[in-house]
Amino acid sequence: MRLYTLDFEKPIVELEQTIESLRKQAAEQKIDLSGQIKSIEAKLEATRKEVFTHLSPWQRIQLARHPKRPYMLDYLQRIASGFIELHGDRRFGDDHALIGGLATIDDRRVMVIGQQKGRDTKENLMRNFGSPHPEGYRKALRLMELAEKFDLPVICFIDTPGAYPGVGAEERHIAEAIAVNLREMMVLKTPLIAIVIGEGGSGGALGIGVCDRVLIMENAYYSVISPEGCAAILWKDRANAAQAAAALKISAKDLLELGIVDEVLPEPLGGAHKDYDTTAATIKQALLKNLDQLLATKQSEMLDERYKKFRKMGVFTRAEPKKRAAHSKKTTPTTA
Image (cartoon, rainbow, N blue to C red; front, side):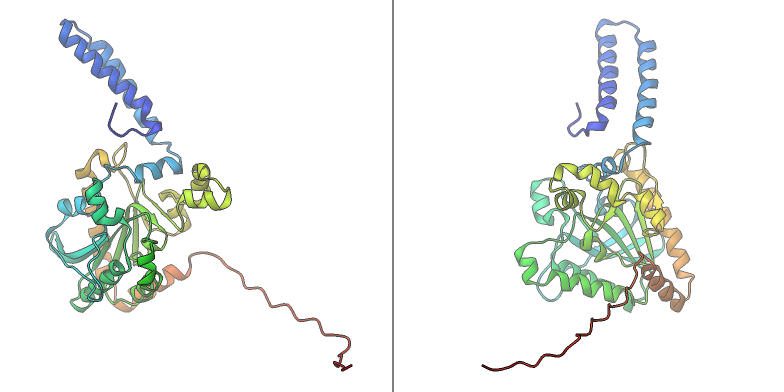
């Protein structure tokens, strides 16, 4: 059994184990089992295709959270060169959950910013499990403004369960830090591209997500609240997370249909963790295509389109205030 197996992957794992057992038996007993192995391999391929082409929203969320899924730095190593990390928000400190710096993708010099999770307990504690503090968002804005000053495009990698909700974050005004980012990103005079590579949780994701282009990986999600949080509020039970995931419309396909994202990037069969290099190549191609389009657009048009993009999201109505009923008689207070 693999070290980490999701429930819906168990039929695939069982077939893989059967093939491995037959190969071992053939080697030890020196018998020809190639026919049986070939038959099971064909069944394995068909099962893998059936499972991963009909995933539910909740199953995709499980893949988005897979501990072996590639993170921002994994992609940077494959698509960029000369990465120079820049630290600190110049106010409080340096947040390791949200990193950023200068990099080169082919011949394009860019500023890259994004959330980073850890692979083990020690690194997760350092990265705060990918949940940034206020200083992380202030650092991100500082780097974006630096990019604007030197005419550098900004690329944001979104992968967070949400901004850190602890007491310290509240004391240092996490909501204000995110709100300022939303306001300032809307008017930054440089191309902005965001890509959701895993989890896109609430304001923690949106704090670096107000961009000209918003891309999303096939098995990533982008939501105002986690399915577990939604289930706890609506059904009073986190066990209804799968039902909440379907209701929230947070999978890549739903988000594209709703106009929340601009493009869905395909992943290898089984998820991005199955083939880092192929996934990185897909991301690089998409980033360069969108970057070239934005660089060819006039700055005034780019800002206007960015504004319209977010203004048209969602539908709301404004009800006329009800008129207050006039009193039939005015009464005058009396004294005893």
